[in-house]
Length: 139
Image (cartoon, rainbow, N blue to C red):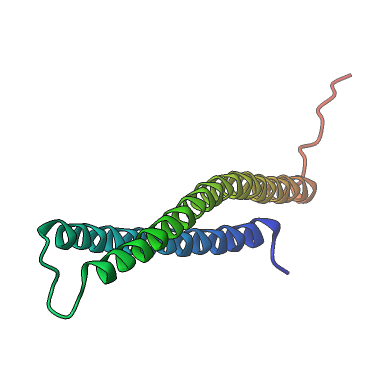
C-alpha cells in the first residue's frame, strides 16, 4: 500500500506535467500572435505602398488585413486566458509541493519514531536478558 507522501509526490508530478503543457500551449499561442502581427505589418505595408502584390487588389488586401486583425485579437484574448491558467496552475503546483513536503516530513518522522521504538525495545529486551549483579547488603 502506498503512503500518503508517495501519492502526493505522484500528484505533484502530474500537476507539474499539466503546468508544462499549459506553458507550451501559451508559447504556441504567443507564436501564432507574433505570426499574425507580422502578417498585419506586411499587409499594411502593401497597402501603404500603393502597389499591391501581383494578383491582389487593395480591396482584397484590406479584407485580408481585417480578417488577420480579428484573428490576432482572438488569439491575444485566448493567450491572456491561457496566461491566467498557467499562473493558477503554477500556484497549484506550489501548494501541492508544500503539502507533499509536509507529508514526506510526517512519513520520515514516523519512520524515525518507529526506529527509535525498535531500538528502545531492543534495549529493554537486552536488559531483561542481562544478568543483574547480586545486591550486596551487609547487615
